Length: 380
Ligand code: SF4
Image 1 (cartoon, rainbow, N blue to C red):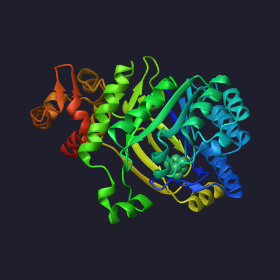
Image 2: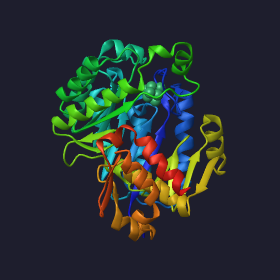
Image 3: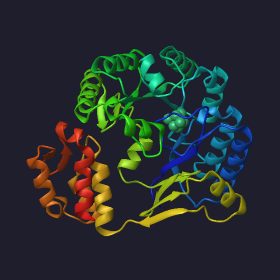
């Protein structure tokens, strides 16, 4: 029997749409949400057998749903996939106070949620406006206070760097704003310009409004320095945790563990097959309601492609590739198989190589996509 994996449930509704966002999301409409939750219920009932250790409710904005709707989803997946309960159950939250009532937090806690991840993005008013976010820095403080008062003590904050107009100084203010709330975990994501978003249109019109790659790298370096100095472990490229507070759900992704994704646009990785559901709400609901398969794509990762994926995921983490564990799981001598790419990356100063482990150096973390990509394309 395989070890418990991660269960992801996508809740795609938002109170408003942010101009940089490329997730599968739609503006909240009550009737649409009710239909979606019905379709999700059908999918939960018919999903393959799966033993879940962790739960992650993502979106979208899960807390734009009624607390009763959310707790019903949690109960349905617990009964079906984790009868003895989840070892970690996270919900993503928008810190807008209208969506963060004490009653809602109490309901999440009673339903088994034990970790909350707030999409803060910035503590600087001008940057929040640029990013199209409607909450304030004060809202975040009050939302965190309410969560803790309801017993939701494991708190993560998400921040974005690279917003137009951001400076090293304003980024330091956001990091200080986050640290002042004493979170257990902080994620910092570089802004990416996604095709088809209003930010892509803005970028096409006026690229000079956006930060250069060098400035973004500088901001990332500031995040590493500030957060590690405050006692956080930089345990994955974008993630920092107090000791013992790493996100177990995401750690399973990076360990190339199995996960089951439910809902529109959700991705799964089960028994070496990677699959993703269609990102079309109507197509998802129609298929789930009719009892047919959910449309989407799937791909069996075999041979070198599977190795490349595993290497790429492991390199994202602070521990990097454990050479002995890699040999045992994939029957491959990592040093031998990747000899040319290891040599090339080492010469560029991006890899720290020992007989037992291969890790990104600090320099490597700044160009992690290129380094990880080199392992994927070499193997593929
Ligand atoms: S960034 Fe979050 S809140 Fe904004 S549109 Fe995307 S999913 Fe919704």
